Image 1 (cartoon, rainbow, N blue to C red):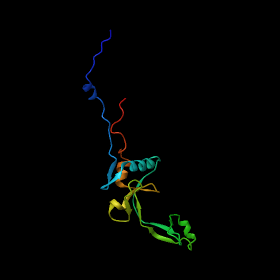
Image 2 (image 1 turned 60 degrees about the vertical axis):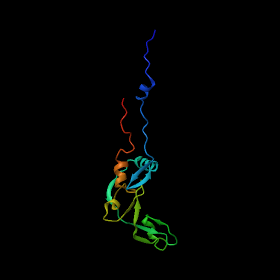
Image 3 (image 1 turned 90 degrees about the vertical axis):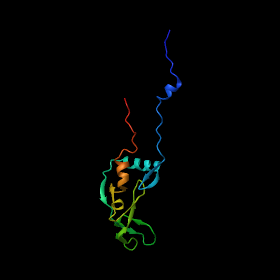
Image 4 (image 1 turned 180 degrees about the vertical axis):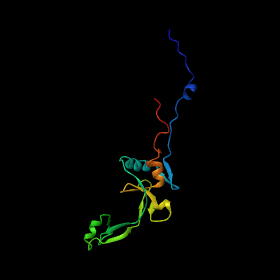
Length: 144
């Protein structure tokens, strides 16, 4: 004969782990952003072993297509000055690759200083929380 003690259902449910839910929005620079969009952008940037460097954002030289509104960072196109005139400091602003925060040449560090891997820029808040921070990491490690 097997002895088995039955626990009342109420005792068992208190030991169940409640599901952890995250909000579907996150506040960055005082504005609500889609958490999923931030997670996807962060995941893409963290997929590669980029070296991130904190730098002042400065206006970039660009070339514009003379007969249109298109531009390029490929300054070698300026060799054909008739078709692609060079505009010194012509690219006056950029955006954080995670949240879209505007970056431009200014003394205000929140808009004028960010992290770059040489191709894209990430504002300091997104870098701190999402690139090097553990925002998307589980709240606790697995217990084995």
